[in-house]
Length: 432
Image (cartoon, rainbow, N blue to C red; front, side, top):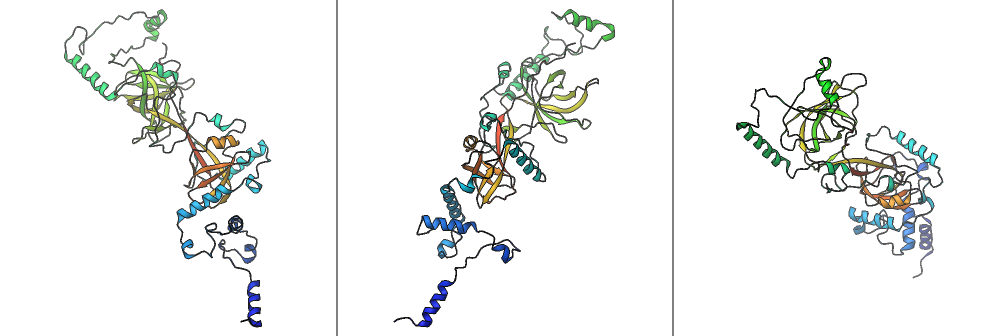
């Protein structure tokens, strides 16, 4: 039957009413403020419906879906955002506000952001990406690691020229047992080639320079001469690792590769140690730029081979004064294959954040650098994990996707590593 006038008027009034969509607003937002808030999901939903008339599975925030769609899992949501992220085009507001900035403006902007985040936890490994040198060239020797503890690193890869001058053991503990057992046999035997304990002997030293002999024999500068016998292999050079702790009485900083005087047992020589953390359950050790107070570190040096346990006293030369005790420790191992990794952290800052995705800037300054470091995993100071999706624009901005939503004030980081080695000293022993 033909509808009545009352039914037609009721249908006309219902069509005039707009569809009400509930939106989540911050707590305390007034109706006036809510009118100025643009919902990103509404815009994205309109674009998606134009591309796909069916509209199935394109907007998960829509309330008119069926019960099955509203109960979808988090995995479906993540895959949905990933698909939409791939379909976005670079243009308009996606290009970023830093396209027309000069070099000085970029540096000032980075400085301002760092100062605003001064209250966050300090990361001593953070470095600045240079503006005038591509990051792929500046950090060409660095690589990313999936896991610092479990990822593999070839100990024979890219060794320095100094490794051609040192000695390496197949199994150091087995060699030490063999050498000490051989010395015990010599102590028990009464041989003409061995001097008995407590007996006096006369030593004849050949090829002593005249100036050295005169200094040793001069009455005013006569010093005691200590002579010690060497075990097998102790005349060779290798990489020694000491467990070391900064002395309580020494307050000045001690940098890695700084010249120090090592007193190891009866020996005294100059070394330039490389400090690292002591990781018991890991074959890789993180390099430390300084020797810190109150905890033990590992000091790796090129030095004559010794067999532990051997005590260590480290002296530091001070201009115009006597050397002072800077650290103490003991010999831990002799192993040129021990891996010490130098870590750096590149930082970027989210410019636009939308759920799982973010546009990050100032980690790199060239699109080629973004593509070069794309396989390396990202992390944030608030514990999020992510990866680079693609480059944006011409100033090194990039699209990134994370396992959870990223805050606008968070910092995006990338860890890079390279192997570090001790420095060969100019001379091992001081001339008399």
